[in-house]
Image (tube, rainbow, N blue to C red; front, top):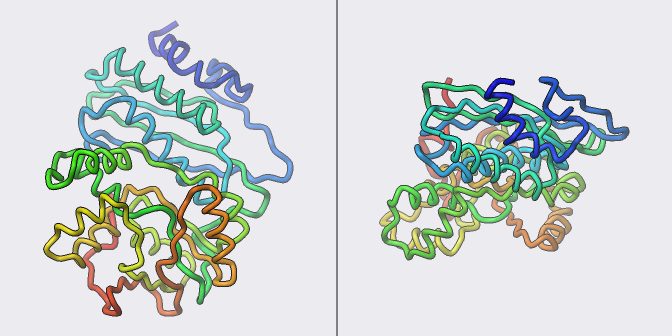
Length: 327
């Protein structure tokens, strides 16, 4: 047995939690059974060291962010997590201890969110640490919430608070010395440990016409809904919910409008942005509140294509709505 297979058996076989689909990670494949009355939702994300997380980041943080960013995609579809596949390309500076820390944290999060590892691959690389995770979830047949579906007159809504991921990266880089140690910790926590809104699945399926998770930036991901739905969106910057730490940072900025624009275009929040008919808004907000999640109306779906960001009635010109993926 090669070192690769020994590593898989020791580090990752326990993460299957005995799921029969995984075949003990012995067959270089998995068998996914059908589930009558449900559709299988599949999503895939990749993370690269120095691009999606800081170089020399703690392995446990990398593992949790990798899984949770994928689960945020499932949350936006109203899906229930089921299982995942993992691919890792290890550079030489990730030694046995670092790999153990990664596997331990991933296993803890898989258990917490109710998934099993079904398979994947591990390789070595001379380049940066590169990871990819494919996550799967179940949704009642025909009920997956898409980006396409927003209707003119719908309310544009967002969960939680926005801008903490952007500020969390600055905090992790030591660039927020003007804030308290507690505020820096809170922002770093949001950056390192996304909180996928999986509990909202039933409420989304019942009330939302379209949904996306906020990874590239609130404005950009709202824009994905607009494009898919062939509608326009008006987003009121003054209504975007901000955390206590973000408000403290905002109060110190010379240009509060430019600062708010930075928060809604910065990305890494992993909240949900969705469209809900006005007559269902209160029901959606109530169900979210029952889960301890704030859902805030921040704008409307309109006929004219595009995303317009406004501040006290004045439309703001922005160079980009959010993170731009490479070609």
